[in-house]
Length: 330
Length: 81
Image (cartoon, rainbow over all chains, first blue to last red; front, side, top):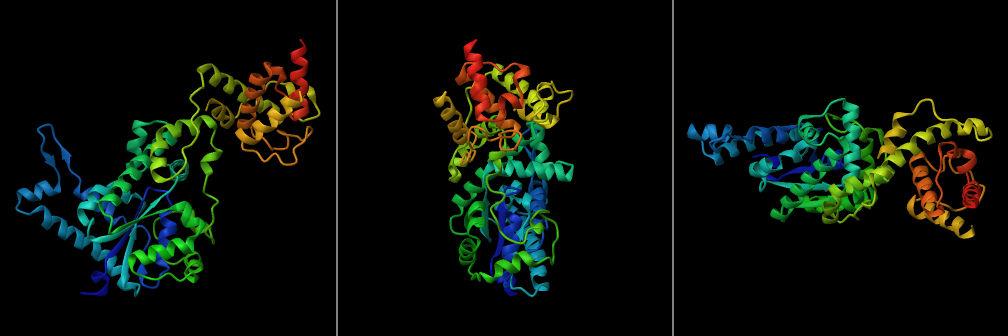
């Protein structure tokens, strides 16, 4: 057996837009670990293992179907695990590295199945980030892609307001990841995006200690300079040549009302993650909301008016920008 | 009115999260981009609540709102009515 199969593989888990691509690039910079662009292998394994329950209470899926054909659950999982690991192993060999790591942003949606598949057979580096920053960033992603991927679309169907849907995505995935970490204390570690960008060398030293390697601070620059083996993944990370905190706290730029609404969804989980709760604005009446809306419309006229021309400054706006009206509605 | 000026500054700093260092009575607030639309809405509602005045449509102007002095003057004029 090759070294890549003798040492445990590493799987990065986190809600989409939690910094998993940054972490992938940092890990891939290590001379002993190969972490390619998103392969989607483990998410696909998760879909493979999912079943649906019919009215009679019978689960319909691959495991159940093959079970009737004489294949045990353990045998099915073993074969699938070997298949999944083999792709990463072979890629690591092709890169002349002895170990593999895997990161696909949407793996976290399939955590229950990935846990069945290899919950005890890999090392998991789990990443958390402030939930409302994640929601803002997923919204950016969907706007950029012009589509909701299936896993996100299921939330959009339930919560038509995009950012609210994505806040629920974060809550569900983060709670699942935290519970997974609790169930697997010896082969998981949890890090925060905010700490990773604040002190990347310290955090990477901890990550490498966890996986049994050593971190050289010189790798940080290598990781960000490398453009090889891009693959699928985050489009933003390659625009950066340094780790910085510019994406931390972007939620503070939302309107107070939106922050309050998302706080109602996220605050309990934010607290569980060690973040401060965001302020809630429970005192607002429908009348106050309408007043804000009206003021937002009027301010659009004021924005365009020259400061020295009182007539122009007080003129009502002929048209109202969608952005201001929406913010004021918030 | 001195107290109201202080209340405005405190609101801008504590609630709107602005850096009020160097902001004086005549510092342009909105036309300079120091306060955006969203925060200006919050400021107007604060002035209405604390100054016991109501902004009519024609009052929402740079002449009334673009500096602390203009806001305080507006509130003073309305209070005298």
